[in-house]
Length: 233
Image (cartoon, rainbow, N blue to C red; front, side):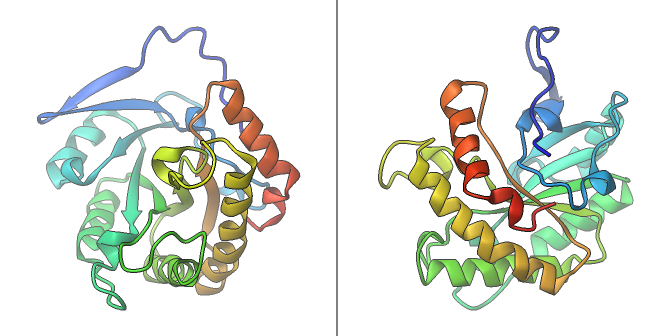
């Protein structure tokens, strides 16, 4: 199954909410166009009833308990947050989960479900498209799956892997076939490691920066190369 965005013809502009000093955009998670298979889709697919299927993207400067209280007040049920590799492993070989332990606990206390983005590069290893970065990234992803196995988290491998901004400025421009090949190789390594650490964990492919032809071409590259056969949910 391929998840594409619903029609956006009725949306004149994104809805914005101010949380403290930070303006956040609330959008249907379906509009992020995550790459999904069929293994566990029914188990996590957001309720289409508004606002149950809505979520807010959070970053480090706006994920406090106070901000989460504001999110809850909005009535949305999901938050999306990067579990950034550099933050988890600031020193090579040492994992530090403190900030994410607090975040997960605070979300659980408010009944908010989490889409946790497993990303990005780590200064200690370099890009995970190559070794030693790939093996280290796989180990870190498995550690997340193990640590939060009792938490209500849907994992997402990378953010916008079709773009130069998040996948990298190496090689050709974003949305290239080579980017799709590199990303697929990483997904193939990560999924079994996370599933071994927590067989019940739910995993999506990375949300694609889309709404233009080249991005959909990148998705087709990924489909044709077998990303839906990697074990992602």
